[in-house]
Image (cartoon, rainbow, N blue to C red):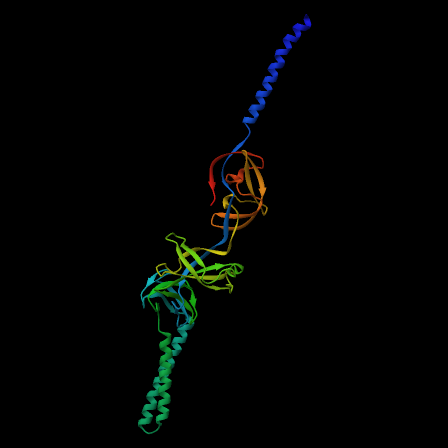
Length: 346
């Protein structure tokens, strides 16, 4: 009888304990971390390799005119900086002779005065019959040469003017700089046709050819321009180490404006495509997170060509699988997820 009472007392406790353990397990499952993500389907589609190019507007062929300093000088002030629209003859910069140029001008002035005096003496001697006409002409030529040499040097301060109407494209000096005789101080892009110059890696330049379509847009905004490549210069720039790609654009875009271009190279290929945002990288190995029954699985993939916001996958995915497009950087393999939106690639 005592054994029966003891059993009746212990049994309910065991039952209660069993019930309590089951509730704890369910609560633990409910508290498992769940990440919020967005996803998209991997689909059958076509992709091509689209390259992003960066460059600037410059004058068309033959449309650039140089502003040259005729003598060694010091740049005093810039009147029309880069990007200024100027008329023909408008002042771009003011200069003054360098110390060396001032001495040269003084010497040229002295030489001109001496040759004029010699010519006057030759004329008097010829009048007296003491000098031939040939000697007079020699003295006259010397006087002309010396006077012309002094004139080319100018005197005191002077200005550098625009040779044509257009836009100041470049200034190669700043106030206070000394400019060599014959040096290009600035250039003026004549009003009219413009062209875009894009710097590209030399290996990429080999894949671009005249006639290819290129979409160009001003970095500052505006309507995109659907243009054609008109030339490719494979020669590498000594400063940028880049080759050049050229496209013709309307003259309404100012010289020097920064541009962004997109050109498609290579043939389109069919295969699996996903949004580029789904592609992640771990030490150089590309991967995606595939969603299956509310859980993500890390999957290594081999990406191919990209076009805009879509990339082709050569290996690792099948059409119809769903990949994470937002929130993937915070995920771990095997984590539970809740989808907040979906996207279907086309």
